Length: 373
Image (cartoon, rainbow, N blue to C red):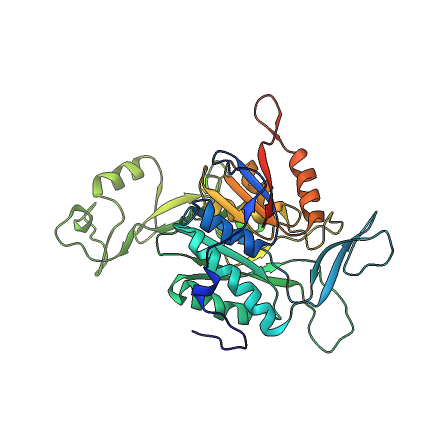
């Protein structure tokens, strides 16, 4: 896949060595909050900080090409500056091919920083997201595309326009290789799920369902292909467990026999950790954010848990209010947050100051850096 547009730069030009430095020495043992143009910061991380192939998870929530200016007032967050006291949080003024190349340049650098087990989640909206997917196919390879996740962001709206209401945005999920970290996230069962999926009740009042004791694939020579209680698995299938294990399950009361003497395994609702997470997520953002386009913290925690492990390095180069780095901090990951807006940096610092770590409620430890030429 390749998207053609004006002023598209060669990758070699994007990967040129950086002449920039940070205002303090780079400390390998501390998390980082960095103020500066993220393109220059990413180039510097590659050139001067030995971070090539070291980042284990990337989440970014870049501008959405809305041609808007987002501001922070004394008591509100807005998409326009409505008073002299408002502070500009960030400008989202790039559109068309200029926006696409702005984003592509950063994605090229992020891929270089990512480890072989790394994934990237890019949060974008429906108006520009399909063009962004083609760019990500080009950079990461279509074989490394994992999901187009629909995120329900708000309650239904009743705007008067000749189109359906928009309550969603999208998250594009890619990995660098096929060896990406994946912790197979689960959603909790709701009461409705329990009633729908576990329709039977035993003598103790526990809800359960049953599943076949056999699985696809014929095993002629192994124990799972042999008869159990005089019963062979159906043609083309094998027992899920050896006959001696099936015997133990039956003695424990975990096998249900039908009227036709067909055995099935009991699965209890209170023993299941949850159901497999699907590609439609409902994580609504706060109605009263402290920073424009601030994202739901539980959304970020879900991503961090699914695609990284404790001690892994998480990077967000559009860190905004700091939701990603709070999620990483609370889940014992290392992190790097980057933003060009000093308002975003100040909001993130306040967020970090509210997180207490450890048995003695110590403050979060991190290194703040400014990019300098």
